[in-house]
Length: 89
Image 1 (cartoon, rainbow, N blue to C red):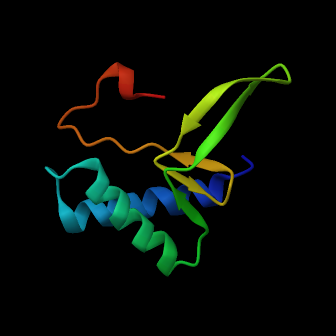
Image 2 (cartoon, rainbow, N blue to C red):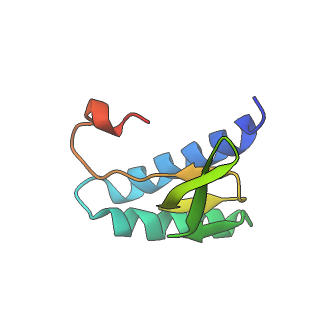
Protein backbone atom coordinates (compact mmCIF):
# COMPACT_ATOMS: atom_id res chain seq x y z
CA UNK A 1 0.00 0.00 0.00
CA UNK A 2 1.36 3.35 -1.03
CA UNK A 3 0.38 5.38 2.06
CA UNK A 4 0.17 2.58 4.62
CA UNK A 5 2.69 4.07 7.07
CA UNK A 6 1.09 7.51 6.93
CA UNK A 7 -2.41 6.13 7.48
CA UNK A 8 -1.18 4.00 10.41
CA UNK A 9 0.33 7.14 11.94
CA UNK A 10 -2.94 9.08 11.48
CA UNK A 11 -4.98 6.25 13.02
CA UNK A 12 -2.58 6.21 15.97
CA UNK A 13 -3.16 9.93 16.51
CA UNK A 14 -6.93 9.37 16.35
CA UNK A 15 -6.70 6.71 19.07
CA UNK A 16 -4.52 8.99 21.18
CA UNK A 17 -7.00 11.87 20.87
CA UNK A 18 -9.92 9.59 21.72
CA UNK A 19 -8.11 8.05 24.70
CA UNK A 20 -7.43 11.50 26.11
CA UNK A 21 -10.73 13.23 25.31
CA UNK A 22 -13.17 10.31 25.33
CA UNK A 23 -16.49 10.65 23.53
CA UNK A 24 -19.20 13.27 23.54
CA UNK A 25 -17.57 16.31 21.97
CA UNK A 26 -18.32 18.01 18.66
CA UNK A 27 -16.27 16.98 15.65
CA UNK A 28 -14.58 20.39 15.69
CA UNK A 29 -13.01 19.58 19.09
CA UNK A 30 -11.56 16.31 17.82
CA UNK A 31 -10.40 18.06 14.64
CA UNK A 32 -8.42 20.63 16.63
CA UNK A 33 -6.90 17.91 18.81
CA UNK A 34 -5.91 15.88 15.73
CA UNK A 35 -4.27 18.96 14.22
CA UNK A 36 -2.25 19.40 17.42
CA UNK A 37 -1.01 15.79 17.24
CA UNK A 38 -0.20 16.04 13.54
CA UNK A 39 1.68 19.30 14.13
CA UNK A 40 3.69 17.78 17.00
CA UNK A 41 4.79 15.04 14.59
CA UNK A 42 5.73 17.65 11.96
CA UNK A 43 3.15 16.19 9.62
CA UNK A 44 1.66 18.60 7.09
CA UNK A 45 -2.08 18.90 7.76
CA UNK A 46 -4.69 21.37 6.57
CA UNK A 47 -8.11 21.83 8.11
CA UNK A 48 -11.27 22.42 6.05
CA UNK A 49 -9.32 22.33 2.78
CA UNK A 50 -11.39 22.49 -0.37
CA UNK A 51 -10.32 20.03 -3.04
CA UNK A 52 -11.55 19.56 -6.58
CA UNK A 53 -13.08 16.18 -7.42
CA UNK A 54 -12.10 14.74 -10.80
CA UNK A 55 -13.84 12.03 -12.79
CA UNK A 56 -12.40 10.79 -16.09
CA UNK A 57 -10.25 13.88 -16.36
CA UNK A 58 -13.08 16.31 -15.70
CA UNK A 59 -13.89 18.34 -12.59
CA UNK A 60 -17.23 17.14 -11.24
CA UNK A 61 -17.37 19.01 -7.96
CA UNK A 62 -15.69 20.31 -4.84
CA UNK A 63 -15.25 18.65 -1.48
CA UNK A 64 -14.28 20.23 1.83
CA UNK A 65 -12.11 17.90 3.88
CA UNK A 66 -12.10 17.79 7.67
CA UNK A 67 -8.33 17.34 7.51
CA UNK A 68 -6.04 16.83 4.52
CA UNK A 69 -2.75 15.18 5.52
CA UNK A 70 0.40 15.56 3.40
CA UNK A 71 -1.84 16.48 0.43
CA UNK A 72 -2.68 12.78 -0.04
CA UNK A 73 -4.89 11.45 2.79
CA UNK A 74 -8.34 12.82 3.59
CA UNK A 75 -9.40 12.43 7.22
CA UNK A 76 -13.16 12.59 7.71
CA UNK A 77 -14.03 12.82 11.40
CA UNK A 78 -17.25 11.48 12.91
CA UNK A 79 -18.52 12.11 16.40
CA UNK A 80 -21.29 9.57 17.02
CA UNK A 81 -21.94 6.84 19.56
CA UNK A 82 -22.38 4.16 16.88
CA UNK A 83 -21.14 4.17 13.30
CA UNK A 84 -23.84 3.63 10.72
CA UNK A 85 -23.26 2.13 7.26
CA UNK A 86 -23.38 5.69 5.86
CA UNK A 87 -20.20 6.54 7.83
CA UNK A 88 -18.16 3.70 6.31
CA UNK A 89 -16.39 5.32 3.37
